[in-house]
Length: 281
Image (cartoon, rainbow, N blue to C red; front, top):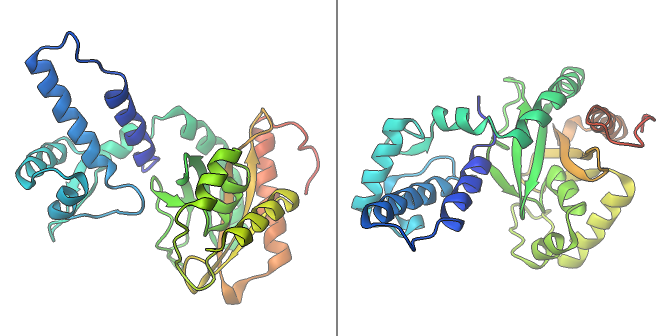
């Protein structure tokens, strides 16, 4: 199962790099930890949409010598954390996806959200996505997609910036003030001429999203797709996820799609025990 791979990798990396002390460790223990730290650093380079990488690219991003990188990548491949493709590029392996799928935060949410997402997908025929926020990025944790309408993104388990997509804008609009400020004041990558790169404009849009209860991203990631998203609330009335629908420009039926996405988000929120969701939006 392909679920929240990089989310689990990053959490595991923090556990191994942030809590281990070397005060009473011998040389063998320190060496083992060094290998583990490097392995997690290598796995961490696959986040942010970098699905496939060459050994040279991994070495450059980790700043590890190519020989060291090759040795650790080979061991990770043998274990199944990475897979080597025929052209020599590496990607996250199925065994790591299987381990990552045990992460409780995403699994419970996925399980509850899937039937409602499937209803939305079957009703509209368009790709349906579920994402959570981790730090300043969003993580895609579930999607339904028609083979007749393939979409390159988002890939389940990958991380993406929040400022350009409807699902990311919803999560950013409801993020803590310090996170929101960091993103708005940070590097707002421009994917198309329509991407929000002006800080005042983005701030105004985020305020509007909080008031309206939904977001629309019109060809801000590519020149074809329009996405509609709405927040999913947890039992404590905070936004814990967002659900979205990806359309093509010519297929947009604005009001109806917004209604269906908000209805889906409300149904998931109600299933999670969120208060105040007795009425259909």
